[in-house]
Length: 400
Image (tube, rainbow, N blue to C red; front, top):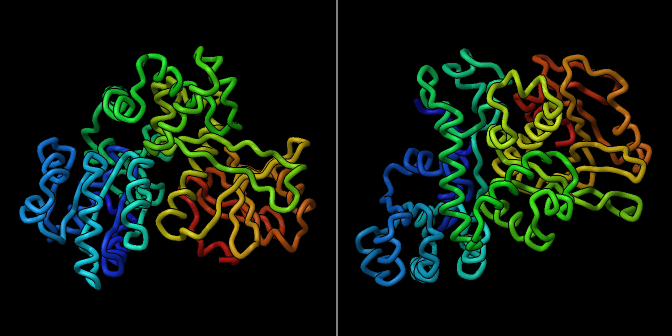
């Protein structure tokens, strides 16, 4: 079963305006599937196949004769030397767009090669698993499951492609983590003890939605802070985690400065935490943290897919008052609090009120409480409770 992806029209548009389009994201989020569907008329080559990667790097002219543009090149990080040949081809065929559509699952290797060879010639789109809207709009799925199932199971398309014969979640993630450790980690960092690294990944999951503290995480695993920093960079490079930076414009000395840690897929985080059922997750003390992770994930997708200039932050003052998500556009702030309750009340507005007092009402254009409800309602003037599990669109955000 095909699940419609929100980014499809944008991919077509970008291929008409840039010579190279790069889709960057973790393994198994559907990069290959969407490109095969949107660019079915293109040639296709997967550089995950060793002989093709070797051919692209050492016999580039022969490779391009076999796979002439327009062409989709999957997992191009396995042939980094080929980027200079892409640059040469694009420069020779100046004025032609949509020549190469490339994918990669190792972000810093890919971005380094893009920066060195394709600056000004490429549109880069981060791509993650299913958004709440994509899942909800697929009625064959959402008619059988609840949002709690989605957050626990995760947004990897393979887990939803056959709603009536879904693969075992535990077996799927077991294979995913093993494959990731064996392939990406060894390639990126040459980690000697994969068992320690897996423990580090599980420690990260246990701390999702928390302020980053590398020294504490290192002590939990028995590694140095320097090693923790290296290993976290691998998770970031593989697009499995992201860091949300604090907002402290002009008044930074009085505010938190450590980023917060989030996973790009709540299902993977829940698996690493050890939750074997949705019921066990949502009755646990980790439920609120995973809900926050999920809501912010939806805005990360929205920003990457529809509004790349939109800035995402969180805010916390020295007194511990916090707003989970700050959206900044045109120097105006939109505040979002994530609350796992169907009945938010004015007590949930403490952080938002502190933010308004700190920066002034004129700087905070509107505020939201993202909670698991079906219908939005005003909690008080200027504050709206919204259906955070599905993610409200920017049409409900008047400052956009």
